[in-house]
Length: 158
Image (cartoon, rainbow, N blue to C red; front, side, top):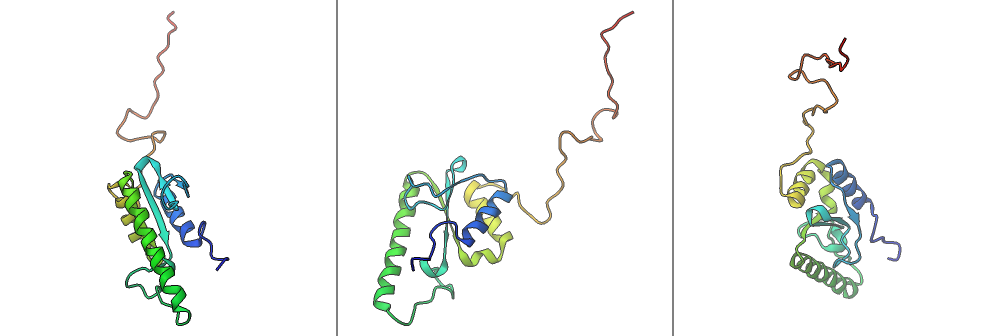
């Protein structure tokens, strides 16, 4: 079990990549917050925990199996993990943070996850979609402004 990482896991990296594509900027593993959240978005006062379905006991998920052997070890361990997660989330909410939990199995549908995370973090409209309309940049010519020719006003008078 020593080889099981608690930070920078593959699911966590996928969630970070998704958040970055959505335009969110964040900090990682802030140790001054309860539970050392995987992703912290200070601008939005939000934190994201990326939980493995097996380790954190995702309710109703087929990945949250119970090992057949050594159940006297595993069951109390799982119970402690779930209780610790609840305590940390309650404390973070008490401190004014929004808390979102991403389960490992949710990474199968990134579009749905993007919508859920955007609402959970910013509480606003979803900026990410496969059908994003093209946004015109300020430096590009715009058909509604001016005649398209730059007129120079000369200060020289003859």
